[in-house]
Image 1 (cartoon, rainbow, N blue to C red):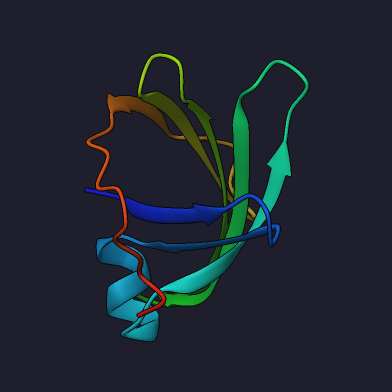
Image 2 (cartoon, one colour; image 1 turned 180 degrees about the vertical axis):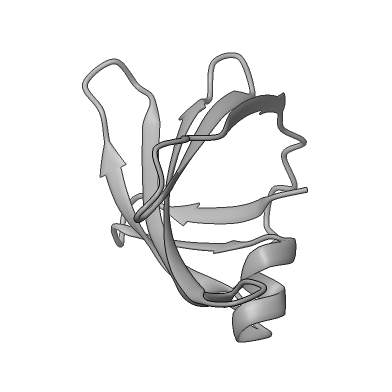
Length: 100
């Protein structure tokens, strides 16, 4: 599960999922881009994740399609060739925010 809030007027976004929660123990800021087709793009990094024998950084890119309440997500693990991806649907919770 990925939970995110977007404040388009302020140009800000917060995001949390299991990996962000494990690493930072709270929501983190995501870079917000409002696309001309009405979609919303979020980019964020999770740094210094612990592997078995090393640490690594992951860059995430999520594209939300508000007209469909669906999203696509891709992770780029720095130093590795694979780029895991996924998709899902969103449940909108008006008036709720990760920012308190």
